[in-house]
Image (cartoon, rainbow, N blue to C red; front, side):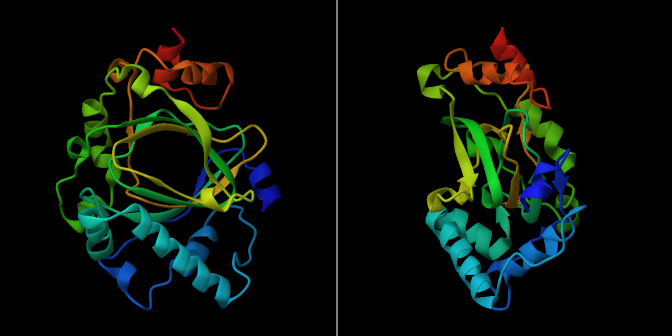
Length: 253
């Protein structure tokens, strides 16, 4: 696993498993088996089981359900369990293999994102400010049209504005999800409207098991109004990560 992540040159993404209605509540449904199926669709991934035995699978399933119940409640939890949606968006499981030294543009999530670090660690620069989730809501459409989330990504980008929040909007740096011995950080949840820049360190890549809609809103430089607390964002420009972000360039000025 370590060699696989170390030798990655670009982001690899597995096939997707779209959540079928209330299947997360069905007794026969195994999230662990979904993970094993998807990870083996990654290009170049070494064949083999992630779990040693059925006991590990059972523990993984139980831990994932506990994570969902701990972080979601009320209508958010009902929508996830009964419809397989979050904030109106149809959800999918996917595995992301991220090489070391990779950064992604500052973006906002329109829906909940539940993440388990299978290997390595993922870091994030994030602001405590949440954009209004109702502004990012997805009106329910047909199952088929929701399977191509890129169709409404440009619409999200146009209306996603990060207004100046003063010191309250200051970005902080930290480990978002890790399997490096800290059990409290092995799983993580992004709330609808959360704003962050995800990256891996120069030395450690990451293998993430994610439940998301498959879309997000990259925040354009013209829509990024924050003036203070952006030093960490500006510093990412000097870090020479693989992808450029308009907001990084704007924060550097």
